[in-house]
Image: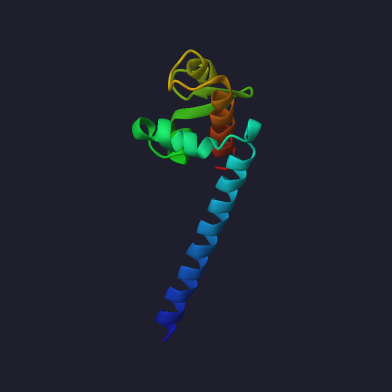
Length: 107
């Protein structure tokens, strides 16, 4: 009986953690400029090469004095996007960068 109780307790804890993560990610997506759904843009235009946003931001990007930069290259990621990487318009660049910053800050 105690083993069943322990499994149920563990399941409840995991569900609570998953709910908190989803709330934080949803909040991050809602804070983008111009009401653009940056999470959808990332998913459709970026994830095919870069993988899930949280994993990409956590492993490949960093905040360097409020600049979104490549973790290893130090290159300005927003400038890279403005130069045409991803073929995003200026509003989409701003939204995706805000979204990725939020992914880093949520860690």
